[in-house]
Image (cartoon, rainbow, N blue to C red; front, side, top):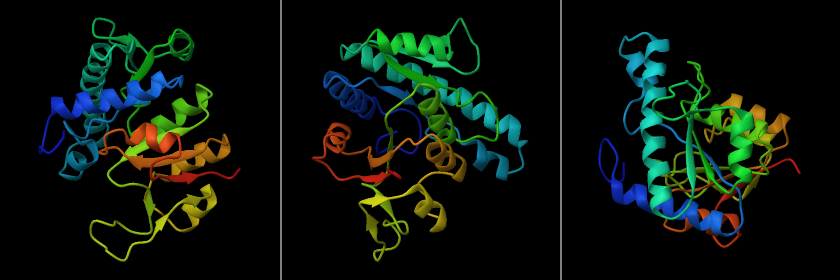
Length: 221
């Protein structure tokens, strides 16, 4: 949503697509799990009295809109992309299956996974960890609002400590809010390192991946 308060900022969308295309051009297979908080936040709406399952389903539909926009932006960047939804909607985009996603990656396409896990009560973090595990990913890269994992929110606590490296167990023991506990447990169980980087820094994805940029790595290896 860029600098706006709602919706899709197409300049920000194009920049993010460019960052992903840059990593793909390095020879890295990329599967992206997108959220929908710029359009709808299920948990926030549920807190206002709406049924949580219905609110989460609306949030999952928002991720499909973001995924279609991102796949289009990637294609315009010259990076083949396919949007896949965990909720079947064949007139809109392909249904997500592990087999089709693996085939798309092997063909050189960026897989844009939408609609979370297809189930309410699961976060985008958990969906990303699940996709990383079933696709055999070497790394889960989380693009977020800051350049790594901190002991507290650095935007509100200037004394917050930044970590360069953590183990999954340390994240759980310190109750760090980088990802929800289900996602951390999934990545720990499947020995998938997590790299947290600043999504808003142009070129930050490739820089963090190649060790030139700031990030935090969560790994037990």
